[in-house]
Length: 357
Ligand code: NAD
Image (cartoon, rainbow, N blue to C red; front, side, top):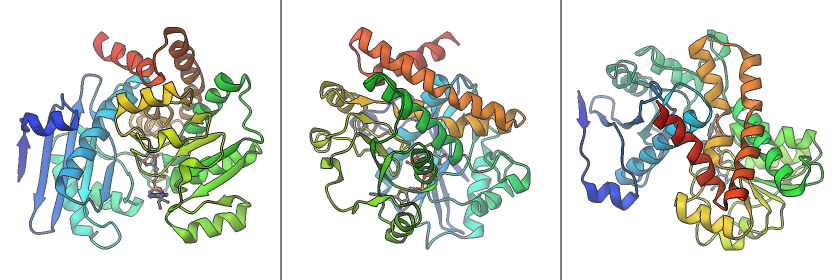
């Protein structure tokens, strides 16, 4: 049933810039129509944990590229957060609004189960608590379970809190005060994480701008919370703002968008915000914009699901997520002292932990 690919042609991986995955599993189930990929990047620190994303990828190569990038990011996210977890991720290829069935989810669970706990899954973009219930009916290697079923609930609450902490630490570094009061913050993508982040920012008195392809959501939040909408099809990168917070999909920071940015800080939840982690984090750094590394500040959700595995304690999860403030500040100060990008500064800490093992 499972096809284990231990050698993907080098030209595919090197053209994408990715190497070092331990195992990549292509899941094909003709009966349910399931097409998924599970990527296990590194299990040095523990089982590979990472959510499952369902997305209507243009082609299979895009799906492979996404899952390889995301799983690699999870390794470093767990390492920098001090968690005993490895990095993994899964993608299901298909339209989450049209192609989901109970049987498809159960079939995906079977594939996860066959890995014997080497990969633990959770909810990500395009998946719902109901979907995860179906997945859980065929495998126990699932976390981020709803509170009603004895789990830790929606991880987005913790992710948003961590992003908020990382944003405040970046403000402290840039402006000498961590207050976001009166600062103009653009949130791109007001989904699960963006919504809770918006609420933290509003509570602190920030001026919040939101942009989302879901117009109903934008209209609703504008009238309910008094935030300002920015059309998602306009050139949002050129807007005058203090902080740009990417909370939709990754790779929005590239050679076209970075030169346009008028903000002082980039701090958001999306994974892999830089299209190319080295080239584009350099470009941001050279423009004098403070970049809070995504894999560091969006770790709150992972911290919370890790706690679920170890014996859930909400207060402890919140305290651990709050530490993202101190780690972000340390990384930004280290980046300044050593004249390296915050991305490199963060990667050094993560790699040190992996190599010590
Ligand atoms: P979500 O699907 O709930 O929200 C994403 C939002 O972005 C949706 O409202 C969608 O309409 C919008 N969107 C999509 N494309 C857009 C575009 N081009 N312009 C503007 N808006 C667009 O997802 P989420 O759970 O809130 O996660 C957001 C991001 O944070 C994702 O990249 C995810 O991988 C990352 N992340 C999430 C968590 C978590 O705990 N949920 C943890 C770590 C990282």
